[in-house]
Image: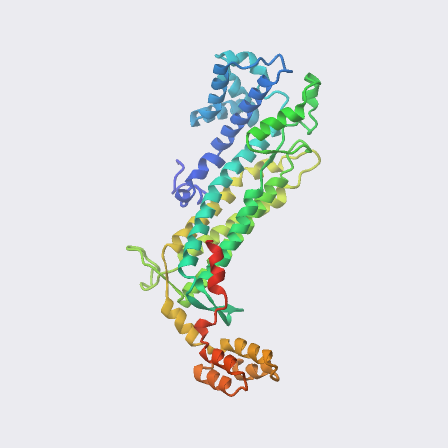
Length: 455
């Protein structure tokens, strides 16, 4: 059976492929092989440019262009040829080496053939390829993360003045505004995104156990740390100078943990929106032809936020496991990291699907200001806080306890609250201010604070 939406084992490659299609070029087997070829070509070019390595002749301009073209024009057919070679070698990186030797054989580059993969262990190529995959995958995620933060900031701006009853412990609490609560999520997402941006993937090219053993056996006078560091920096990575056979993967763990934290913020938001929809604070625009329930025709379910929540859970399960596992390797290396790293795209895929589901859900939301106002009007007891606070200010006896007796566990209305205030021996200005206060006006600096989301 051919791979397709109906035959894929993973929903990432099936049902949800359209939501993460751009990750195919990055995290597929093709994406890995393509980046291996890029690293091998960059290494050969650096060897040719090293004057101390006389046997690897300097490149002419046309030869440099030809070598770079091998990586730049690498195709699916090229990757298929690598896999064909691998059937014989039973070694994926060695197959790339032999592929490159085939490519240069009919050209003037053939004289440098034995400098392809020179002094390298497979992990020199693999760790850099994985780092490049993560660099490119991160760029895809960050673009969507920024789009989501921008959308929420726009919503925060539009609703900065709209009062909303807050809920702490699921119970009515001091009012806020819709925009300010959205701004909190924007700030949290931006903070975690900045942590993701801060991380530059580490990489190594220091041989079988990290000591440049083979390199020095051939060219003892070459500054191999500097030479390999230049290749690593040129590819936009950061050199890790102390490693075993493998790059320690601590940088990967840091990235995955940072993505997990960003995902957790979004998951928290998805659940809050789900609650607000169930409370009627948000309505959902209907989509023509769309069905909410197979048996209850009236329903418009918050399916996009539920989809996002589920996919974020899957993403964090995969990324969280990899962050814990990859930092551990027996002695100078074991192979458990190899199969684990092949699942990087799974965590990225679920994350991307989730972000786009949330964006889709946000596009259907409509604020129900009438419901918001009704909830505020029905919870005058939230004004117990400002009343007892003013009573404290003027030195009245037992202010908290008196308001507790009036309001705890019972509903009070505007009449009861105002009668209570009128009976208090308060300064005229304080009494006037409290009598004018209503739940929808008791929002503190919420409108001002919301502005941090877009300013």
